[in-house]
Length: 195
Image 1: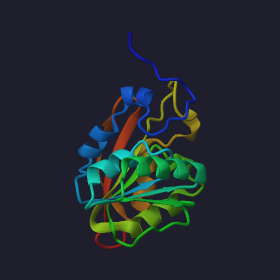
Image 2: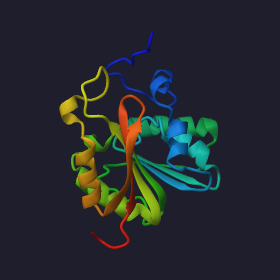
Image 3: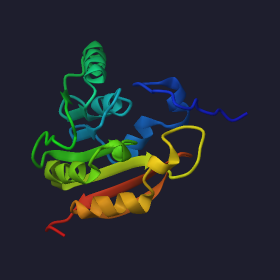
């Protein structure tokens, strides 16, 4: 019998149920996260990708986590302290207003959140300021299909819509592919000159 995730459940870092259908370490390895890199998790929530990213980036790497929910950031700080993850820099704030660093990120990551922002275009313009010229943007998001879990289908972004937003912010799409049964993954790089 195939395991079905529970609808409308809030998932936290290292959640065993979510790990049955989404492997953060495999996704991070697949997008090229390695020790020593700088990773920015925009809309990091409870840290499902943030903590594995910090473990992977290691002591010579840096992982920035940004979320509007101060309670989740506090929980994430406590989990990071328990693991002695000193490479994790967490910030409470709106992604529409936040530029955590200039041209510092090897990878800017959006983990199932791009559709949640009040102004995704502004968030992506900020991402373009943070990514290194050699870096990349990764958008992992829900397929725009009716399914038992995730946000309402009308709130989700079809890949074509996400692509148009990402390109408008100055990125060039490298790949679009499925990522497990429920998600798609877009990888983009910054244009060397404005579009």
